[in-house]
Image (cartoon, rainbow, N blue to C red; front, side, top):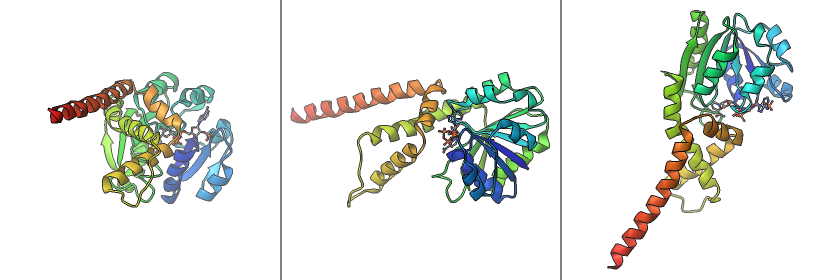
Length: 254
Ligand SMILES: NC(=O)c1ccc[n+]([C@@H]2O[C@H](COP(=O)([O-])OP(=O)(O)OC[C@H]3O[C@@H](n4cnc5c(N)ncnc54)[C@H](OP(=O)(O)O)[C@@H]3O)[C@@H](O)[C@H]2O)c1
């Protein structure tokens, strides 16, 4: 397949590597100049949307930050998206689904996806890692199936799920993980000679979450309507645990 990747940052390049390995033609385009990185990956790089569309891709993947997706779409010559499968990989799902349904021409197919892994967790293999998707509007079924095949071939666990259900689950899983990582990062935890396994897991959470951009974290908060409630619950829970400890201490002293 010929795959165009709009937003050729960390995650775009991470995906490009595997697509190229599978023999697909990859063309990247982004705000910054990633020509050298693309060359190293065996991909092509163009600097404008016009050049990207001139390559007549089968699939166009939106791999921009959550926060910039609307702007990127507004600046893209969307009317020229005709017989193409448009895929997003944003870590929130209802937001891009609505954006794409509102903005893309009817001739463009829409597949919303969330690979639940990244350059850290999927560094060596994608085997068994969840790939969530919703076929939102698909006229060309074989083309969509061929794209999904890329992930199947890597051994991903294919999870067909509505964007709404995804966001429900993601607030209590992914957002809580990032929230925990960012909160613990403020404690500036250090590795010691007597690390327990549990502590090493915590250090791992801090590292992987803080390796992702703050834009991504903010996007999870801002564009998943369920995230604020999780933030409130975590704050409340910390106070509850403190109250529990203090009450226990008082009971011991009696
Ligand atoms: N990292 C992960 O593990 C992971 C996993 C699953 C899904 N995702 C999703 O993949 C997407 C990309 O994630 P990421 O990790 O690469 O980091 P990110 O910080 O979420 O996004 C970086 C990308 O967004 C582009 N961008 C940022 N601001 C822009 C603007 N104002 N105008 C145009 N482009 C802009 C960057 O382009 P330039 O670099 O050219 O500036 C870069 O390509 C996100 O939607 C994220 O939710 C990430």
